[in-house]
Image (cartoon, rainbow, N blue to C red; front, side, top):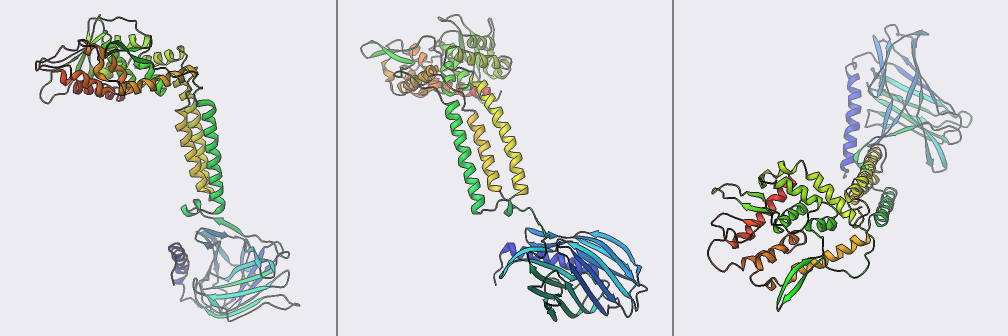
Amino acid sequence: MIIHRSARAFLVIAAVAMLSATAALTARADEPPASSFVFDGVLGSDGRLSVTETLVFDVAPEELVQRIATKQRVDESSHLTYEVDDVSATIGGVDALTDTAMDGDYLVMTVDTSTAAGQDVVISYTVEGATRAEEGSSGALTILDWRVLQGLSVEVEQVRGSFRLPSMAQVVDCTAGPPGTPEKCDLYASGTGESPMPTFQTDALGVGEQVTMTVGVAADAVQPTATIVTEWSLDRAFSVTPGTAAIALGALLLGAALIWQLHRRTGRDDAARGTPVPVGTFRPVGAGESIFETREGLRPGLVGTVADERVDPIDVTATVLSLAVRGYLLIRELPRTEHGLLDWSFTRTAHHTDELYAYELTLLEAIAPVEGHTLVSQLPVTLAPVIETVQSSLYDEVVQRGWFDVRPDDTRNRWRTRALVATAIAVTVAIGLVTLTNLGLLALVLLLLAGASVWVSDRMPRRTAKGAHLVEGLDALSSLLAHHPTSEMPQGREIPEISRVLPWTIVLGGKDRWLQALVRTDEDEAPDPHAVDWYHAPDTWHLQDLPASLTQFINTVQGLLFAR
């Protein structure tokens, strides 16, 4: 026979529990046995069972202990609980109960039986929770299932008893023997119409052995009182049934639809109007020659912020390079030892030709103060006091230009707060579902939807129609930078003209091909430390080193800004 692993584990647990209960009584196996044990059970219509046990001893032990179970396992994930009340024990009408105490799932009664020889020891108690509803072959039944003999600390030579019921028994069964391996009782019967009293009898039961009677009556005769407690388990919490799967799937579809609709109505850009116009183009200036021009007032940092709705290190890096190309500062690559780190200095210059926006001026004064200089390696320190001002100025600028109605960072923060509140609620509800129900799949769906709401919150900034039109133009410029021939720069002016393209390629792509175009202008083997007026290098530096130098510069600046 093949036993499923979970069923096998349940059997092991049940056997260990029963053996543990029996072990507590084994030490008394040498006590004098009871010559008889008579059970009298009265089942009321309210489902409450009143029990009277009468024991007779030829030779009495000093004391008698009985352990009555207050819990009975139904399966590996649930159990029944019983309420045992009105406990008493008398010998010859005199109270002999010396102690009652709970020991785990057992009510333990201790009776002083030192004077019980030749007298009846009468133990009585009431039980609630021993009747349950069940469907029988002839209709609904109320089933009484009770261990009429259990947990005695002495052997019993003969056990017999009966039940008094409100109506005729329709089902009767009786088992006796050690816990876990019972057999049928020697004798049991359902009674007659005149005397509907199921009876049972069996002989020679050892310490801790049991007799269990099962009696079924018409459902309308006795009220079910069983309390089934479902225990927590991972399998139960995440059980997959048609019902739990349907609830989880329904919640997933509904939640996803709500999030999608919310983003569609609140976070989707306004529709762009008109034909996309590149924000920059290459204007012909002669046969096979052209120069790069952008729409007036545009800067790489601005369009980078509009493109991804946030100010990030790449926008700041592009702004630094733009300031250098436009003549506001000089980037100088410093000499280094064989194994030293590469570093650069920023120095203010006066060769500028256009105005500065607020965020550019703040950035310039931080990294290249008048009559002074700073190092790239010092960026985390020099930018720390002003970086939030730079970011705030950029956000203000994109709103003032009409590309957003509300600052993107404010929109993100507002929706992220709502998403985090929703996540906290979802986590709380999920814990409750996993702990108290079998709707673990629904809990997972709620957590997934909460995560989706956090993800969507970062995508809620909404561009205006003007902003959406600008993004379309950026797409056109990005394609132009990736495909326009780099050989069309005017002869003799290749370096300054290509330099004007470079800050835009940091934001929109295509940087490597334009750097290679600069390398091709180096037609001799002499060093070129000052060939680029905005980027100076050590005396042994060649123009063909610019791609590596500038790539390291960009990566270092971005890395320091990320690590800030």
